[in-house]
Length: 64
Image 1 (spheres, rainbow, N blue to C red):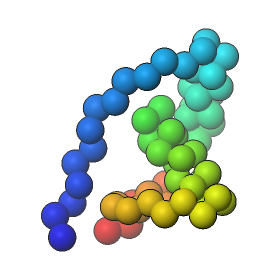
Image 2 (image 1 turned 45 degrees about the vertical axis):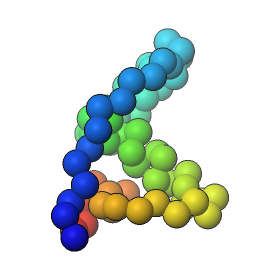
Image 3 (image 1 turned 90 degrees about the horizontal axis):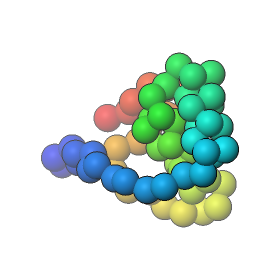
Image 4 (image 1 turned 135 degrees about the vertical axis):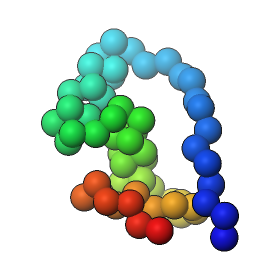
């Protein structure tokens, strides 16, 4: 299977949410994009939403 390439995305966040994202990413030593991916994957796992494609482990290691 060919690895999927990430795609640029743009959306708006309130200043409060942007600050929270920035602080969470810094605390976890992640980029903001990676922090968002981790958060979305965690939400999906908790709510039974299947995520296809490359898995990003919550411990910061990519699985192939």
